[in-house]
Image (cartoon, rainbow, N blue to C red; front, side, top):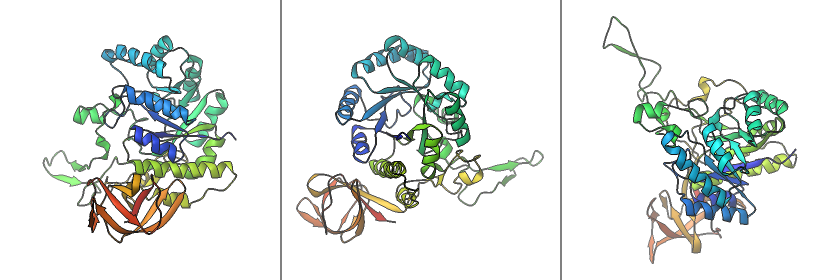
Length: 397
């Protein structure tokens, strides 16, 4: 078995740094206007080039997302974008649209092209088509099960297959949703989704002869979140995916926090390494994932059809067993994200492992304080043991 590649999101240069620090092989990113995350993106042309150079110096890879569905007015802008990417040389371009694919072939014939999940390559005929056009990899739709993935690999063994193993699931076909555009005039296919599927909906029946008399459908006093899909988590199925021919394990979440990104990356890094060493799946890894924001976990379509058990009807707020307190910066300073008090028992999470610690004292400049609040910036923390730079501090909820 070839070792699968762990591919995680990078919404900013800082997130890229943490992704590599916590075990990623590859980070995917893109520029606003050309990728599916225009609202949560801290890259410009200069930062993109610097990130690619930095990744290559570390022996890592960068895939650039070019996967929106552009209207006529954007095609020439895409052409100039591809010319620039040819100069800075990312390791691959992720593309959904045949028109953009053609532009890449014209402007950068040697570019390595990966077909985005947005392209809906749902069967081996689709995958064979893209291989014949010159694509090197397909990111498979989340709607596929393990048997279908295996058959695609058997029918088109030359094509590399990549699959999402963790993160949010859209209530749409491979993420190609029109709900946000219809309700808020923010087009998800242009990278500015309002996540309308996560909103609370009141569901009623109205009988034709009784106008104005509404009967609620299976909802409590808080309403219901009828399209709030649980997050996909394929952690127990990594070996099955690898055996089915998947060479890239992909994590969703370019708009998530560095804590979320680092936790998930570290868990999947450990799981992949365990798998390659011949060790059985460790259920304790799932416990670690529960310590970061999630909507509950589901294998999605991997082992069957999507059912009502895969929707989180109660609320849309993420749940987690631990609260993210902050990230350790230089000289013992902690960038505080949530309130914590002096004397708190916390858990420290770093690339080298997890351990318990106690906050013995905290300082705002020279003044000792009893509590630190999220958003207040950096505060000096004194722990009862050494805590490394780049570690995360979290507290049981």
